[in-house]
Figure 1: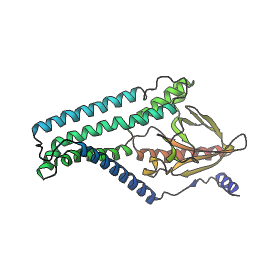
Figure 2: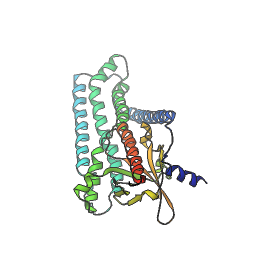
Figure 3: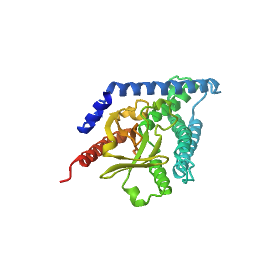
Figure 4: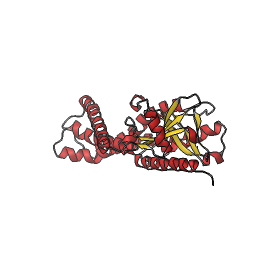
Length: 311
């Protein structure tokens, strides 16, 4: 009975969209902030216990110069690491075979060490100014030394959750892989950068990126066509049972209130498949949310035009 009702709504041009619950977005941010602060504080507390800096250490000009030099080295190391990862697509050199699975693992590791190096560098540079200031107000040596680094790491981690520094990788990786699969530049120019995932599987259980595959989507008059790294499919109008809209509560996209497009599709063997779409190539979570709304409108417009009788 439930399946018939959904199919009926689809035929009437109605998408099933779950409303945005702002309390869930706020709760997600609260949990994230608490988690980052607790683990960062714990890590630096353990480090400060082992530090050989005493409470009577003088944070003079020599200390400040040293911190600027050390901080500059870490920032430079982070920048060099970023461009190496960017221009090698996280060490991806062979596009003749599927690359997404291995790429996700390498990018997960790069996303730990590359930003952390830059964060520590910024923190050490701040130490040059902030640590002597804190020491003058009576803060102990280790605490005065750790506080700027701790603050930089926490704040920059939160910034980098909203800002997607690896955005250029998406287009580079997808274009190279699809060219290897036989698509030409004209075809690639007309596609939308899209990732897909299975909404029945919780994103909490996934390692690294939540997308199961990445590729491009084309809206042709008679069908939707997707080509990806290791998957491809087409959806005709009569196969599209419903366009659902729902948040991925296990993914970072939920922090911006993104309500994903989910295609409910009838397959040739009589089964149904639900395909959650992810927009790729966005610099911020806010931009990804806006692009998702644009995608939803385009898919709805495609369905409306495809269903209209030819006069």
